[in-house]
Length: 486
Image (cartoon, rainbow, N blue to C red):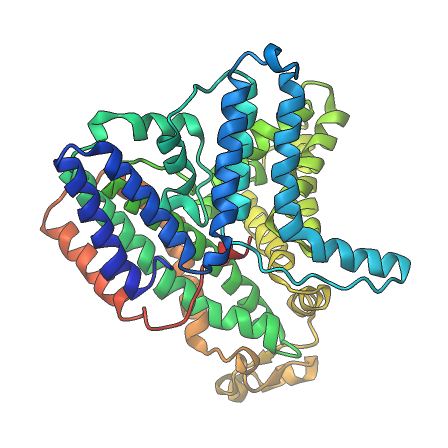
């Protein structure tokens, strides 16, 4: 079930909200939490009920292992380290089987000229997210940073529907106390108003902005055989903004939905395209993933405590693994490599104590991110090379015929006149949209900043109502969130 669907917005959400608080009003706290877990599992199963046993068994397994790590294990003669290792391997094996089996088989066949049949397994929804979330729980249990939580609260921690499918990757320390708190068991009308406000912004980001760019990005990457220079840049920038508004829109909706139930999810985006260096970008983009990579991979590898060379290696390893987490393909590995290498350069550059102008630092950072996204989006290497080669080729410039009368002399330099956006089914409005959203992400406050200063008045009601109605008119289009694939 998608957040941007009629069945979710007009049936599932109001029904779940009212039944949950009905139980709470009757002081049936356990029933209310049990119902919310059931509703979340129903939400998860809507896509494919076949994978319901998968998340249930994963949740039960990790709860038992986590609680065991909090106990004295001398009676059963097993070390906590061995139990933790077993738990992590079991989680990664489950993720690896569904997500990476075909990738490994393809590369095995390629390397050894084999013919092992591919499994063609469907990737279970949210498996990357709930796996990482629970690995963090096991590691923290091993460190003695967790308590023996009530199973119902743990089940909510894993399955809570606003963050279940595509994050944020929540941490037990910020969620479990909220589920256990009695202060969160009554309706909070300020939270409801703020939640609906943020949800409306996120819905608009997704169905109006992201899905508009999706058309040009898809045509450019997947359908067009060749691209001219302008089409290539519109293609890459369209995906850059599609991904941002798609994922940040989902996160806004998740945060807004959670607030309806008095739960505060962590911030996952903080205007990442305003970043003036790559480190700043990763402090703003998918913040909860960055936190996980730092706390559970980079620091355990040694972080920056063992000299420059080791620091650079740790950065590369962390981001290559981050690339692999996003998808089973060499393009994802290379994308992770690019970001790791960029962070190494940033670290080395910082030691020179030489600063660029802010506008130039932003320009370099933004263009690097945009170029790296090409590999992230491309289904195959040739798709990435098609877009990139056209972005930097000066022999395929095509201008609109309206300019031909005054700029015909440019024909001597290989510039032609014709359909500037024909191959991606775009128009001059494609460029207008790109410029508008560029100004939007650079000059305006983001949704979290707006929510911090939110006040319920006729202006905010009108604004929320307007963008919600506009968004509702787009709900009949077929669209899915990009991060469902990861």
